[in-house]
Structure formats: structure tokens, C-alpha cells
Amino acid sequence: MENFWTSNKTINGLRHFVLVNETKEKGNISFLMVSVLDSEINLKITYEELINSGNWHKGWINLSKHQSIKEEYLNYKSINKGESIDEIFINEDSLFNIS
Image (cartoon, rainbow, N blue to C red; front, side):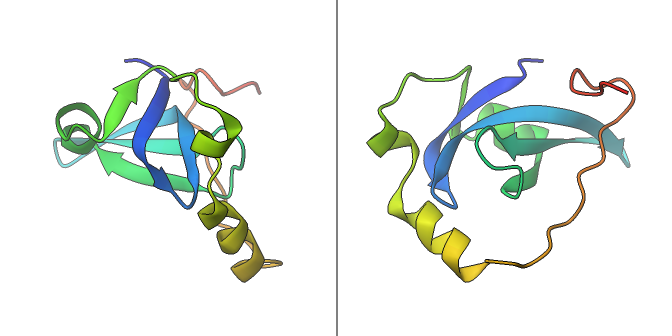
């Protein structure tokens, strides 16, 4: 599975993500995606959403800063300033597990 993805629409103002975990729950595959620029922006999505929805592009699309970081990101950061985030747990078999 490709680890680097670009969202066709911004998610909290950002578009470049890495797939850090793949889990199977009740026969369904889901993925934990984390923003390349800000680990506070992460999401869990299904296989169908990632592969078949048309909302994601495999790999990173070379975008200008204006295209990849939107004002929505600054608004998100100012609203969520100082709030704690959920911890991200990396599976042992994840490419990003360095322990």
C-alpha cells in the first residue's frame, strides 16, 4: 500500500498525508492518516474512502504553498490553540515505527 497521499480537498487546511497505520476491525480495513506538516491533523478512514472515493491521489502532488496550506489551517490552529490532541499509536509493523 502506498504510504504517501494527497487529498483532493483540504482537511483542516492541509492536503499532504502519510498512512501510518493499517488496521482490520470486523473484517474492515481502515487507515490512520497523519498530515505531513502537523500531526495534530489526523484521521481514520476506510479502505473504500482512500482507494475508491476519488478523494485521494496516490503519492504527493507537487503543489505551491498557497495550494497545499490554506487559510483554513490557520483558523483551525487559532481555534484549537493549547488543546491537547489524541495520541497517535503506531503499530509495530508500521513503516513509521522507529522504536
